[in-house]
Image (tube, rainbow, N blue to C red; front, side, top):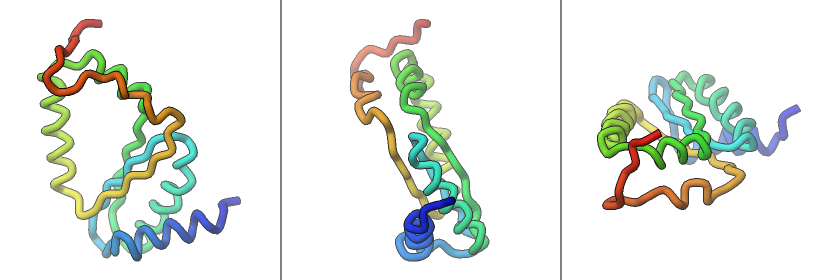
Length: 118
């Protein structure tokens, strides 16, 4: 059984914080298993008002592996695709409950050498 506080939070996020309207598109990103109940309730609330939810569930450990080996070409293409998707959205909601918030802390920053090896 779902915690009623999660349902109430989902309703508040969709109607009060986002003021989502019928026909609008929302990208909902999440990470961590603990975020799933809230994402589930938000998606149900989005459908209730006739809006269109798009879901992205991130895994920080997998993201780290990609980023540690990504070439500049790959990162640039990822940015282009993310930007194109975001341009189509009317709203964005990120819900995180990551087990390790430092999972990607050792990923090289701009200007450092990219390793495109295995």
